Length: 180
Image (tube, rainbow, N blue to C red; front, side, top):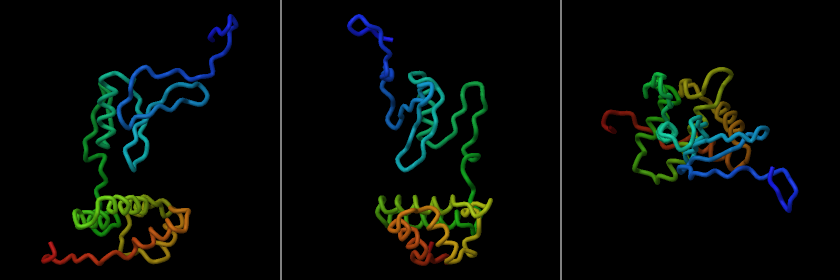
């Protein structure tokens, strides 16, 4: 409560954060308790919840881990290895095809275009067919009806749907030894 002209009144303004947050870190308050929640968001990625107290060394380490896309383990807990966080793509899967595509076009197309295509392809790989993730399935079994189902599910605007559909027929990839 604050006093205004000698009368007590409730303060409806949220408390101001006394310290400057690192780039990419945002403050969201719980709508019921007004408790602060801190999140880190890299461009084009989802928010990651930060649980340490801002201004501490642990908070800085947690932000650094979030920037790298690595899970943060507080002091006293075992640190996960990098390999535990990365999905290993099986040869012949949609994930594997996506990784090969990114590897082969790196440097030959504009970085912005590659980022846009990567976002679309990551959404396609993360789409679920029942309990199976699309990225884990063999790409040779994908048919036009599967692409249309994915397109309709991950994009809600007609123009965005066309972007997904266009990704179905990229230039053929030459897998011969001479091409490498």
